[in-house]
Image 1 (cartoon, chains in turn red, blue, orange):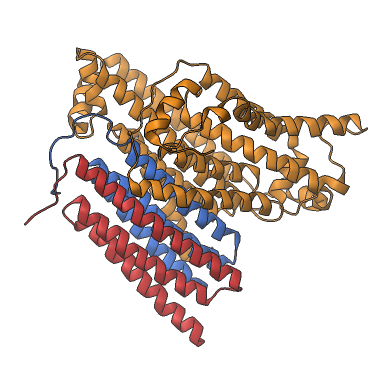
Image 2 (cartoon, chains in turn yellow, brown, red):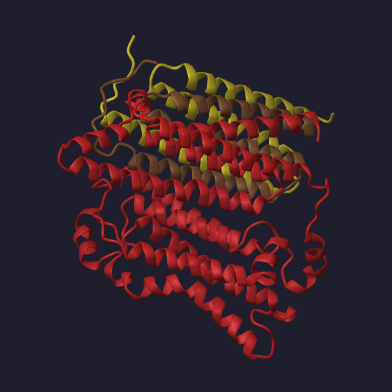
Amino acid sequence: MSMTDFFTLLLLIAGAFFYIAGTVGLLRFPDIYSRLHALTKADNLGLGLVIVGLALQAESLTVVFKLILIWLLVLLASASVAHLVARSAQQKGIKPWTR
Amino acid sequence: MEKLYLSIALLLLITLVAGLWRVLRGPTPADRMLAAQLFSTTAVACILLLAQAFGQASLRDVALVFALLATVAAVAFVCCAWPGIELEKNHVDD
Amino acid sequence: MTLLQWLFDGLLGVTLIWLAWQTLASADLFKAIVLFIAFGLLMALAWVRLNAPDIALAEAAIGAGLTGALLLVALARLNAVAAKTDNTESNRNAKQRFAPEDSVRTTAAVNQGFSNKQNLFRYSLVLMLSAVAAGLAYAVLSLPPEAPGLSRNVAENLYLSGVSNPVTAVLLNFRGYDTLLEMAVLLLALLGVWSLRRLPEQYDSSPGPVLDMLSRLLVPLLLLVAGYLLWVGARAPGGAFQAGSVLAAAGVLLLLAGWRLTARFLGWPLRFALIIGLAVFVSVALIMMLSGGQLLQLPPAFAGALILLIETAATLSIGVTLAALFYGSRPQPEQISARQTDSGGENE
């Protein structure tokens, strides 16, 4: 296995780990606000790692740019949508979980 | 390498299905709105891995459209979710 | 197929069936719509696994995004109508049906009311549907393992069609008549929706800064992706319907973020954009017929250019038609100018 393949392996496994962490958070956290954190932050980091891993294997520079475009788009969209969902939840009176 | 891509894609699909359980259970409609967010990140990674595994470059365009359309769906959720029915207060614990 | 592929496809199939059942069985309509959108997106993933990226693009755009948004707005309007009328018994029941939290109570109350005759009807329906499913399963299982259909004929004649993507060749050249009629049907659907009674506006008064910024950033990107899909449709998965539906998604996002057309664009420019696709298609068909060939017979020399022309017009039409279907009622100029002052935006 070449160095590139080895790095891709590492990055993909790290990405999958963050996805699993995000899903565990989504299932186990007590209220909508913390679930948003888990889903948005952890999953986006996982996506970033997966995309870097795939970019190492890409066959041309165009493909690398397309992958980075997808990642930036998902970042922008996730951040905005997380804000919108949290604001909508707060306007309807859902209070954050306190200990 | 193809085995690696496919196994990671399978892992991502399992996390997607697990996340859908929260969409089903989630007491408030806000939890259901997370579905679009979930697909926007997880399904996009899944499709990109499938694109690399089978060498089909067109699947990357599919991933791009997925990300865009999941966002539009999420905006539609937020704009039209709670239309005037009084929500029962504070289902904050599971 | 390797074990990993079997596992992937198996999990996908089981999840699809489970989602479909949950969508139909949930008493809360918002939950059902969210699950329907999730079902549509997973279905697009299934199309990807079936080696059909064109259909995956169309399913993700139309089946999940646009239809989901349409259903959500319909639900919002239904709830608004139910909340506005008097608090009579029927309306209280209607509110209960739409309320997010009362699912269990509503289903139990409804189930107790079934009589024996209705039970008999339901069971006979289940039997009939099981028979149909068994027939379908038998038909699928008795197919030969390799069933190429007409793909060999298409591959042999692809060089005559002017494009190198077989799906585009079939849609726009070999079976162009079907596509022409589909576009007519889409226009007729819009006419049908416009002939209904006008409904009042339902959205929030003003979008927050984040939604505004998101619409300003995403809509140009959506337009770019639509143009890209249109251009690349000649040699890779893409084409008029996919590009048109991404264009419609841009329109839907604009409408959701509070943008409205000014009165200047609501009359003839809107009508022009709606009919240009069908008009160009019919004109090309008639010109081909008048210049000696059959209806819709594209000469191989400039078939590629003609297909691109038809697809461009079709993209614009499909996008505007789907966005107008989402908006619902026919836009009235007086109403729009009243909203101009508080929405503050002006664009196309």
